[in-house]
Image 1: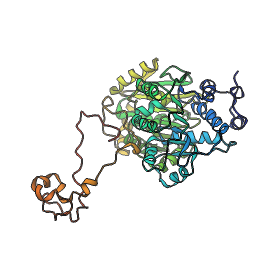
Image 2: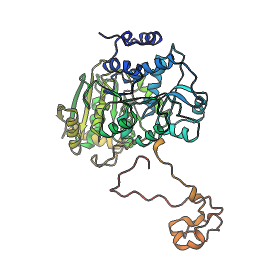
Image 3: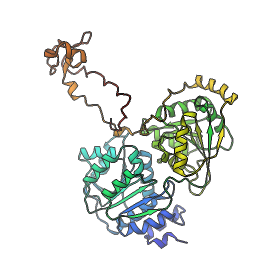
Length: 481
């Protein structure tokens, strides 16, 4: 049987692996490590929880240690792009653990925190930088990060990057990288768009695939419960009250839905917290730390956290709402049955989610055992109480919902108000009609062109223009809006 020592890894790395209790490499590690050590480009396809981070972190650290040289100022020798803050933190922690005996520097950059400490860390140069695309582009725009000296470029969870609309930022970042670099792409699935991106950025890559696309971990006991949408919350509380349900991650489709479910569970006496893209970094870290420490039984998350949560001993994953994208189901339930352990995945399915269930079963090539909990009188009574504890979320047709509902805040385009600040009082919709000649104003008017009832703009800095009109119903929401 293959051992880590058989892969040509250096003694400091083998010592760190022994200290962490790692004995044998996983299939993705056994196949990927020798290729990366050779300096070849790699396209790795493997399910979540199969050890992908070590598959690229170990050989990268060895290559950097064998060719020791200072990192470029405001730059880095290795760049790892991650779709979420949690995943970036997790990857960086693994790099640090493996490099504990090597003296290499590892830092993370992501949104939701102050720029100062990140700029200070970048100033002297970094051996390994793990970053989210949005915040890295902010640093590049401020010239506090220079990517041209990057020797190794890693794109982790490439398919989720696509789901979150990160493909354009990735292309912009890659366009400033040196052509003489090593590229490593890792993904759980390989949609055609990611295949196209890989073709653009990879140079004669070696492809390593250790599992068919969109398959699920065999150790997970999966089941579907058919239930009315309005009775999902009491059913969730009933399941979480069972003694065998110790540590559970609950997935919802929207951020507001996650907050409402967490609020209901706490009102029902079940310790829970929500985690999603609108939470501050501090809130997300505190919730995740409390969940890891066993201080709460349930963590309610959206799909953006599906691949950024690495918690041991998660006994259950509950899909409170089925995902819009079938592949997301694989990533959700992959939070349990990690490191060779067993796990249970329960999915609630309302009548309007039947098509989503069919898509999941088609993508995973399996029929998930189903049980009917509809018309349960006890749940009907509990649902009435649930509505008082936490009002239900406004209904959204899952077939029309955008799967990118949880795009990180650093990707959203900030509203540009510079023109409005200079526009004086005549920028209102009515003011343009009533006082076009006087009120379009460059901030020097005295409010003569303002709409009726509008306060004078004074110096032109108080009125910021009309509110943005709502998007047409048929237009899909863009992640950069």
